Image (cartoon, rainbow, N blue to C red; front, side, top):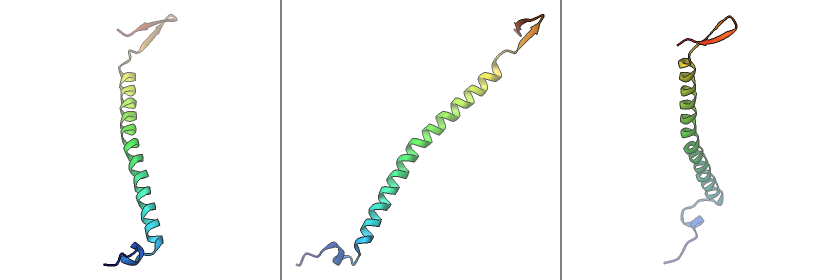
Length: 72
């Protein structure tokens, strides 16, 4: 049995393997970016929602004669 080079055995050019490696690298970068971005987005959205609810629950201050009173 004669050992053949990968380029001869599968009839691919060298550029095919370079582009394939570039494709895998691009896929890895996109995957890592997604793994980082999705939880960060969810966390930031929860922080924003929590801050908005905290603003709604704050008691309004009333001013009477220059003195601030709580609405409680």
